[in-house]
Every structure is written in C-alpha cells, then in structure tokens.
Length: 120
Image (cartoon, rainbow, N blue to C red; front, top):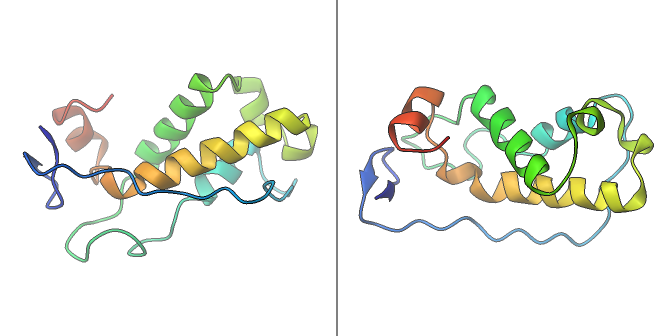
C-alpha cells in the first residue's frame, strides 16, 4: 500500500502534488545548495492535513539527497554555493526543489515511520 493521509498505509492512492517550475531558482550564496533545496519545502501546515505533523527535517534532507543523486548532482555540488553551479546544474537544483516539494505532503512524519512504510 501507500501512505494514507492519516500516516498509515492504506489502499487510498495519494499522488505527489504538481509543481510548476516557471523560472530559474534565485541564487543566494548565504546557504549551501542542499540548504537551499531544503528551505524550498513548504512550511508546516501549508500542504499537510491538519492532523499530521510535518516530516522530520532529516527525512526531508534524505529525500533532497536522493533526488539530487538521481539527477546527477554530487555531494560536493550540494555542499557548494548556488552561484558556483553551472546554469544546467542550477536548473537541476530547481528540479530537485520541485521534486521534494511535490512529495513533501506524502512523507510520513518520522524517519522510523518512513522505514516502516518501505520508504528508504
């Protein structure tokens, strides 16, 4: 099954939210690329149902790292500043932000819950 809106595993299918990427991400060198990706996730309560806690920040960071790796961004790039990325790498960073924001409402509240639901 898939995680249901109450945090359990059910038969009700929940889909990632559509995210529109309509411009290049802003370049702010006050944080690393990974921090920029994590900070792009909607704040508590904005897309989570009222009875669920937001996902653990460690889980969000793990998802950001996973999507970045899938799209070819290295750990070195994630630890660098956004302005040090090439234009195509900045574009990939924007896609990672969109991916993490899209699945954010579906994430369990804790890493333990995620592991119990088969999310690794």
